[in-house]
Image (cartoon, rainbow, N blue to C red; front, side, top):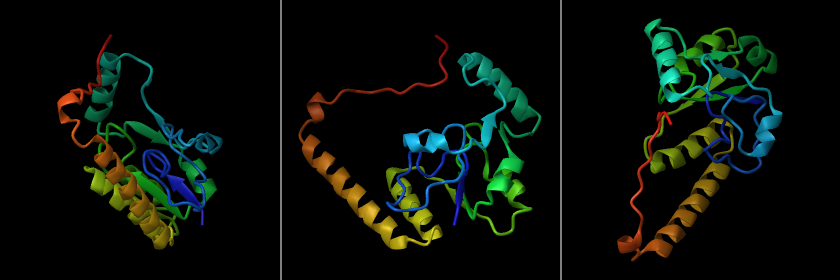
Length: 178
């Protein structure tokens, strides 16, 4: 079957089990792997993503105060692609389209299944690989990929063991005006 995608396509920040059908559509933020950029863009922010943090904040707050979505979903394009699965998140209504937004467009697409992920930990992300693989009918591929990823994580953990004194202290900040 075909797969559409919500705010982040299944291949953006979430590994997809090898050999799965590539998504037929993507969100505006999905650009990895590069092949994803060959798929039609189905979402767009309602404010200029290249504006300053302050301008984005003002625009998003205004949109949120109106109670409407912060992102536009091209409903007719989604419908024309006839996805059997749409993968979305239920993390943050400011960061991406919401599950409610996706459910609303799927109201007229009864054969489309919405798969929602909401990871808050690395284990959750790995669990989502299995959730997506199960939804796509290839649970064994998901399990293999998760085992492989856990093996790689264990190798990294082993490689950095004993480096606690020399590890850098890192701070990640967003929404800064420069």
